[in-house]
Image 1 (cartoon, rainbow, N blue to C red):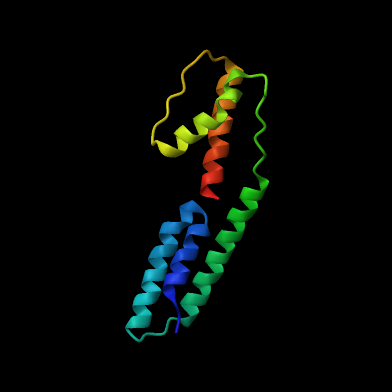
Image 2: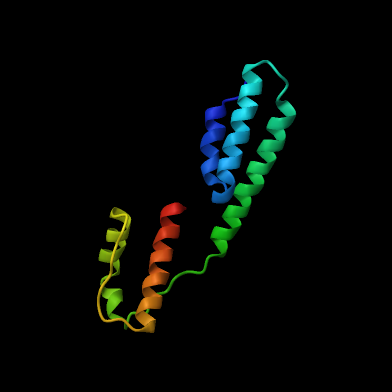
Amino acid sequence: MHDFSDLEARIDQALGGQRFRLRQRLRSIDQARRAGKPYDRSLERWRSELEQSVQLRARRLARLPAAALDPTLPITVKCEEIQHAIRDHAVTIVCGETGPASRHSCRRSACKWAAASMA
């Protein structure tokens, strides 16, 4: 007997774009199991696809460059405060004197924090 709840939880480790399809297919496999129909081959194919997706996501996350913030920029002093605001609120507006370097640093920091929260 298979524990489909453990398999369902593992889907969160797959690539975001494949999660919906993986969930739908797992539900179909579970329905076949409950109906007494053969499902072993489908489940093994599904597990293989899930593992490939999980491994691909892990490789992509490992290749993400580390975001290094320029300590000379004024925004760097507020990084922790901005990070908490991004984490705690759906929308965060950062105001101040900006130039190309500050805008780039702010975007790069936001991406870094978002990636850290998804991992």
